[in-house]
Image (cartoon, rainbow, N blue to C red; front, side):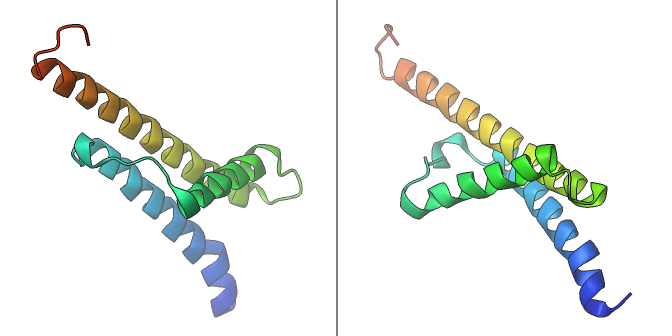
Length: 104
C-alpha cells in the first residue's frame, strides 16, 4: 500500500471521525450560552452533513468501509447538533424564568 493510498483509506477517515467525536464532546461540555445558529457560509456544513449521511445510507457503489466511516461521522455530527440545540433551548428557558417572568 502506497503512502497516499494509506492516507486516503485510513488517515482521512480517522481524522473525520475523530473530529466529529470532538465536536460531539464539545456539544456536551461547552456552555450552552455560547451556541450560535449557523449564519451565511456556515450552512455549507449542513450540506456536507447531508452528503455524508446520504452516501452512507444510499451509496451502494461505495466500499462498505467508506459507508461506515461516513455514517459514523454523520451520526456524531447529528447527535452533537441536537444536543447543542437542546441544551441552548433549555438554558434560554431557565434564563427567561430567572428574569422574573413566570409565563415563560
